[in-house]
Image 1 (cartoon, rainbow, N blue to C red):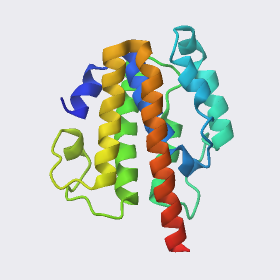
Image 2: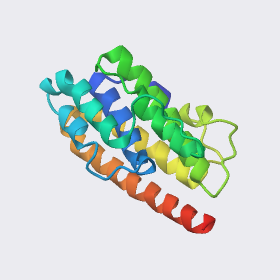
Image 3: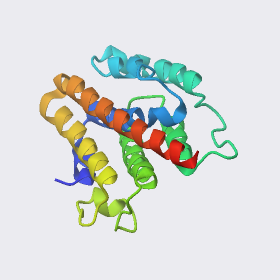
Image 4: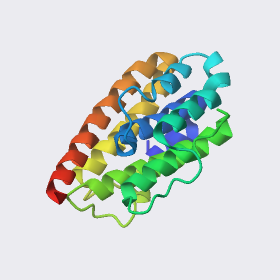
Length: 189
């Protein structure tokens, strides 16, 4: 099943986890540490967390500078995409709102990985990748696509019990992206 189909079939919790996982993997671009999104992850575990989502989101935005204007002069495209993911997060965890956000986060995260991958991706856009056309895909984009699919499958197959393994998948991806960004910084010098 393609990533687009998985997002189309996911429930509210799966969609919120999907969007949050994409943001989590890219949080190092925003200067965030490994724990900054934990309150949002914890809120996905129970229904009471849905009511507190907006408040927790505002706290995260405060820590990461994700409210209001988010395009600082001189920031590169990957950072801008990550800032837009955070800025677009809905204050309410309704199915309709988190579906739009999860879809946008999916695209943004794939674009970020494509921008940071030293090897070129053969496709003109990430949409082809999301629809299942994977020929000539660069390694970093391929890994991000697999992670996005895995998170959605874990939540669809295991409900709340899939949250911990989904977080582990996201943590692995965050470490990979952090290493890529670090190498890129050293090359730029």
